[in-house]
Image (cartoon, rainbow, N blue to C red; front, side, top):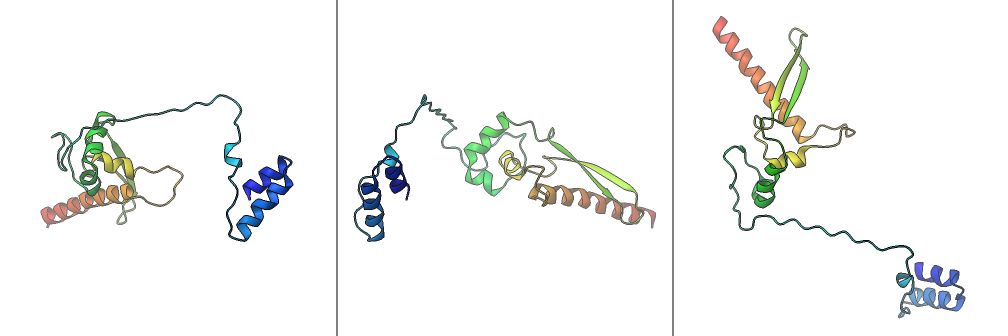
Length: 162
């Protein structure tokens, strides 16, 4: 369709018809000229390469990076490179807020990337745009970490007072 439109606009109605007939009858279409249309302006090509450390085995990481996961095992070189760009696991934190269901008091807790045992590559995949309304894996992990701490606190206060 693009070729026949191109030929019609170029003033070649016979070639436009020939192209459509060839496709309609499953014949051999003429060499398309639409892809050879000259472009105006300056052509600019950007090329980028990233050289990662070859031969890194899964599980290889700095002692300061905690956690493990399938992404780190699948791409150990990327997971090894990301800590050079991202803040440390203790420096990436979220404030989790909720209302206590027992007494209605607002509560909050700070959860770090290290608390969640998120590898750098997992953090990269877990972060989503704020416009997405659905809970992400990061939300689920934060809630689970926070509420396990709350449950532990409730259990320890219940057993110590009883």
